[in-house]
Every structure is written in structure tokens, then in C-alpha cells.
Amino acid sequence: MSFLVPCPHCGPRDVYEFRYGGEFQRRPPPTVSDQEWADYLYARRNVAGPAKEWWYHRQGCRRWFLAVRDTRTNAVLEAFWPEDKPEGAG
Image (cartoon, rainbow, N blue to C red; front, side, top):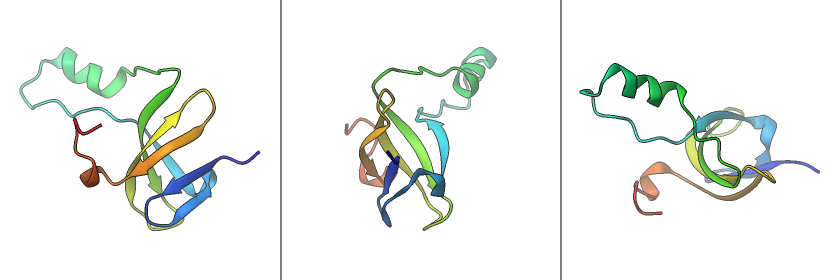
């Protein structure tokens, strides 16, 4: 079974065309404490189920996008440009 990632520009492609960029997190303001900054950089939720993640299509359009992937099955539920779905919109 292959693992396909649906690039919003290029369509479904094999996962080996992409670079995984990690879980999506809101960047903290510049005034946070050292501990809060360390948490942003290194702490991950690592959920079992749907997770919003960054992906980079390195062998295609060479753009970063967000995808919601079920970490239990690797099924990508949706993929979108960050500007198309602002934080808090779902």
C-alpha cells in the first residue's frame, strides 16, 4: 500500500516527493520566557489521530502547505495552503 500526500497544487503524489515539516504550532510572541520558547521548539503533542502538519513538496511545486493526517493510518484527510484556512477557522 502506498502513502499518498495530496499537494494542493500538484494533486496526490507519493510521500517520497515530500519533506515532513512537523506538527503545526502557533508561533509564540517574541516576549515569551525561555521555557515557553523551548516548549515551542521541542515539545510535541504527538497525538494518535488527526494532526495538523507542515509538508513541503520538494520534488514538485516546492511549496509548504498544511495537511491534516490521521497518524494511526497515515490517511491524509485534507491538505490546504495556510492562507486559505487561517488559524481558528478549523
